[in-house]
Length: 253
Image 1 (cartoon, helix red, strand yellow):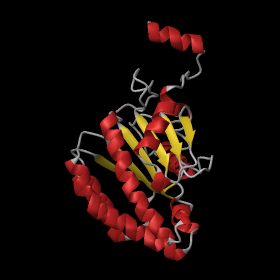
Image 2 (cartoon, rainbow, N blue to C red):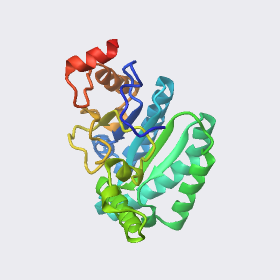
Image 3 (spheres, rainbow, N blue to C red):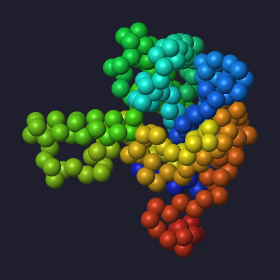
Image 4 (cartoon, helix red, strand yellow):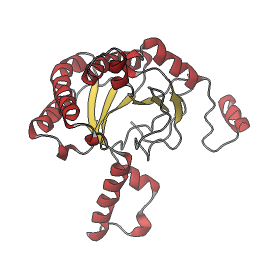
């Protein structure tokens, strides 16, 4: 996969890469007088639906923001239950992903996770390594600023070692050290739950991404809701700095 900006998968109006902040699990549970973790468990089924839609539509990559680097600030009990849910999902879903030819990639700082969870992450990725269909990317203990910082640190180490000069630093070089290197930049960013911000998610990669915000809480974001987001994307004209007339002329060329 190339990391270069794509032009709608390509002319059929379908994104190559969709990125989602799955917001609203806790509120979904609260409205039903359930513990917050019940909302997160319900959200796992929505993940399955989203993966299914992407596979059926021929979307190349789906990135899900599962746990941000800021989520450690939540109550300790909720964080512990989320880690348990993450571990259980890895153990349970890996076979399903492999059977459906879905490749799994986990991005984020794994060092904060328990050794057991780190082992399960590595095993899950290895189990789906040879799959050639949809690429499912799960951002766990991930932050956009962390991603850019670790890329800068890696480049700094190369300069200290005498392998690079400051003049060698380009946008493409920085991208090579980010978590999504070699993957098309997201064409469509979706956030459920009514909030309209990106919350430190994929800061480097969302420069030309189309944004779609919805009031629907993540556990209720069903196939019809996902298709509505895709339909909204298909109606948009993506210019990448060009004029609308230039875009239309390039289509006719």
